[in-house]
Amino acid sequence: MARHDVPAAMRRELQGLLDSHQRPELFDGILLLCGWCGGGVDGLRSGKLPLSIPRAHDCREILAGSSDRCRRLGLHQPGVLTVSAGWGRQSQRNPAMVYWDDSPDDICRRFGADNGIFLYQQLIADKISRIVYLAGDRRVETEGINHSRRVAARIGAGWQVKQKRLDWIKTLTGNGGPAGIICRKSAGQAITLPDIVSDG
Image (cartoon, rainbow, N blue to C red; front, side):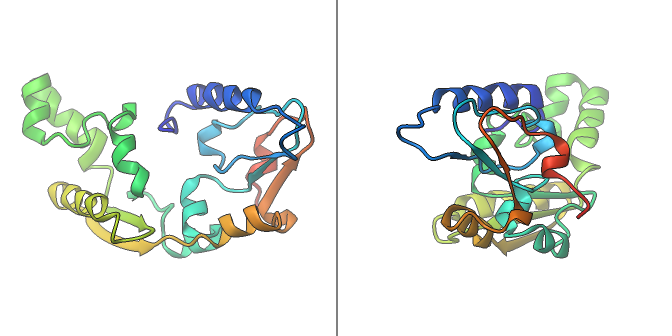
């Protein structure tokens, strides 16, 4: 789902999915595998089933394996764009990435020279100093890895590939994980910011 920059749309879509899966006779609960994502999960509730969600700011922490590893890799630093296999598909639908694959010349042709240069600098070039691709299986993610490398070269940004760590996901889907890394809400209770993002 490419909705991180449109939290209200993300919330509507996720709530619709939650509402459509209220089947206590089939499920013990729902595990929502995303983070706070700019408030996209704020107020979500599961009517008849318990709802669990990782205590993560966003998917970077989940894909990196933990909040601590995300910090060690510098993925939340200003100017760092973290991408993964879903990024290529997301860039086709995400309003913030509409011009991602366009060259500065393409944007200038579309919006005029002055506007095009301004848009390119504001949306892409001046905002990103390093692209980090979080890879699962590098053999099947070659296209995404190479695409991220080309984009980094085009905008003059640094580029790295780091291995995804699925430790957190395995813990969450296995035994539910320790209380510190997951938020559990009873049926009918809403998710709020303090549930997900805390200094502790």
